[in-house]
Every structure is written in C-alpha cells, then in structure tokens.
Amino acid sequence: MKGKRLHRFDILVAWFREYLTINNYRPRTIEDYLFELSFFRRWVEQETDVEDIDDVTPGIINTYTALLYSRHLAATTIHHKLAVLSSFFKTLYCEHKVYIDISECLLLPSLKKRLPFHILTEQETSDIFKYLENNSNKITKVQNMNDALWLRNHAIFEVLYSTGIRNAELGNLFLDHINYHDAVVHIHGKGGKERLVPIGETSLRAVRRYIQHARSFLLSQNISYVFISYRGRRLDNRSTETIVKDIVYNSPIEKHVTVHGIRHSCATHMLNRGADIRYVQELLGHASLSSTQIYTHVSINRLKQSHKAHHPREQEGFLD
Image (cartoon, rainbow, N blue to C red; front, side, top):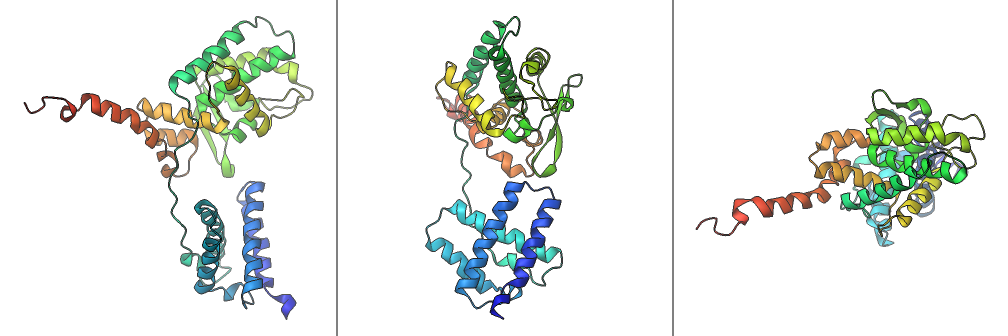
C-alpha cells in the first residue's frame, strides 16, 4: 500500500502537464510548474499521512503555507509556489478531476508593484539613436561582417523601442511578419497569443536597410527569421541582451539597460506623452490592465510636476 501513496496525484500531475502543453504554455514554464508540484508532493509524502490528492485538506494547505513562511522565503517566492498550487487545484476542479476546489484555501501574499529599473529617459533614448544613426550613416555600402552586424543591431534597437515587444517575440519574428505597407508587425506572444502592433517609419527604414543590404552577409542557411546571428542562425535571447548591452555601453549615456528595460521605456514614454493606458496595454500584449498600470507610477512624476507648476492652489497669492 505504501508504494501506492499519492499514485493518483502523480497521474493528475502528468495530465496537468499535457493540459499546459495543449494550452501553449512555454516549455520552461511547464517545467517550473512541475518542479513546484514535485516540491509540494515530497513535503506531503514526508510530513503527512495523506494517502492521495483527495485527502488534501485546507489544514494541510495551511501547514504547507506556514512552512514556506517559516523558511523566511521572499514574498515573491512564496507567492509563486502557492500560485502554482492554486492553478493546479483550480484546473483539476474545473476539469472535473476532483470534487472540491482546494485552491480557495490558498491565500497568496500580496506583492508590492515594483517600479521598473533602468528606464531610459527620453533624452537618453534620443542620444542612443543619434549614436546609432551617425554610425549607420557612415556605412554607404556593406563591405564586411562588421558593417552587417552594425546595421542589424541598429534595426534591433529600433524595433524594440518602437514596438515594445519582448525579447522572445523579437527572436520569433519572421520576414513575412512585417507589413511595410501598413506599418504593422505580427507578433506571436506569450501563451500562443497573437497581436498586431504598429511600427514607426524610422524603425521600418532601419529594418528594410538591414534586410536588403546586410542580412545576406549573415545568412548561412535558408531560414526566415528576421534577425539572425553572425553564424547565420536564429538570434537567441542571450545574444539580443548582449547586443543591447553593448550598444548602450558604447553610447554617450552611462546606464545599464536590458531588453526589458527598453520595453519599459517605450511604455513609460508613451504614457508621459498622453497615450491611453489601454492602448499601451494592447501594444505590450498584457492580458491584464494591472500589468500595464505599473508604468503609471513612473509617468505620474510628469503629472506631479505639471500639477505643481500650473494648479492654482500651488501658486503664491492664490487667495490674496
């Protein structure tokens, strides 16, 4: 009997893996979910007398939660571990695999929205683009690999800032995903979700120049990805991060900037200039408006400055 403990739990975890795969979760996300479930399973097996998943009670869940807190884990870590459990049990209940929704007993710690780090100011962004354009304009004809890589890197920075797309989304861009006539890009986003986002004319010119004059220098096989490595392969996330880091490091500004930092900068600058937050949400591909609202904490600084400068109650002699 002992060897059969949690047998049905294991079967349902295997089913959950298939469920996540069918619903287009990323492989790394799936593995992360399975790791957290295996962590919970080991604890149940070692510290409780529970025979299988139907015997998991609110008391068991509360004891497990208390364990996480007793280990002084970060709130984000505890939140993540419990969120995976909640998703697992909620899905089982909704798919009629269990009779009780145990996820209702899971109380996740509240997380403070942290402001994005390393956001570029508009002036810093302008300085980087001047640096890129000045060097690109020196290339009247692509004559070697260095010229080709420079035009590629310039185009990458343009696309990232113009569209606010994620690192992985940039790497998954195919040539036919860019519509030059309508100035839009077809994005394959997280969870298999697709969206169309506009791209600026300046950025399109940089992309067109790279594709027409530089991409062939990098191409070693017949692939349709827009951005490829110097070895002629699909550009991976790590390489893109290195490219952005090198561009910023060699530019006139002194700041550490990541690909995600450019995404943050795009959203913040648009909100600062009056863009509707729901438009920015659609641009970034956020499923929830709350994910986009974090940028309002940054753009509110501009509003506060304007309020202080122009609101009557902030002016001397208002009631004189």
